[in-house]
Length: 215
Image (cartoon, rainbow, N blue to C red):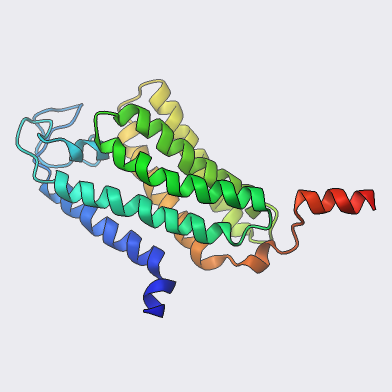
């Protein structure tokens, strides 16, 4: 039981990926670029295509139940990570934001699969990446140089995806969506296993800095 608790984030990611891959394998076909394509096309299909009652080619979509399950497990796993990561933060306000944002992201991410897709996608990504931006700020103050690099790369990939979405580049966006998903998940696992409270111990909370200056 203790082993499961220790590796709960990793187990959650693995199980979620299994359900998502199963959904991808069952997806009948169709994409915005080609409604008559067969199966899930990695370069053209979006993950959100897996959630419809019917696939984009008009066939009944048996993949959606597996995709729904993955969509429940992923944000729950990420929320667990954010709660654990918040405990490592040296600043209380930052920790609270990370905890609240991570937990609130569960509902927003799940609702992406509903008719509120566009709104919930904006809310979910805002919550998720706000938490990662805060974590990145603190990582940049540590000696974990390789993690600094990965944090920055992940953020740049995210903002590039936002840019592609803003200009409606539907050719590159399906690919960057998956790269973004993979890099952010990898980042979360590395932050989970390769950071500790001691890495941030030298960072003094702002309140303490202010008091020290006054004294």
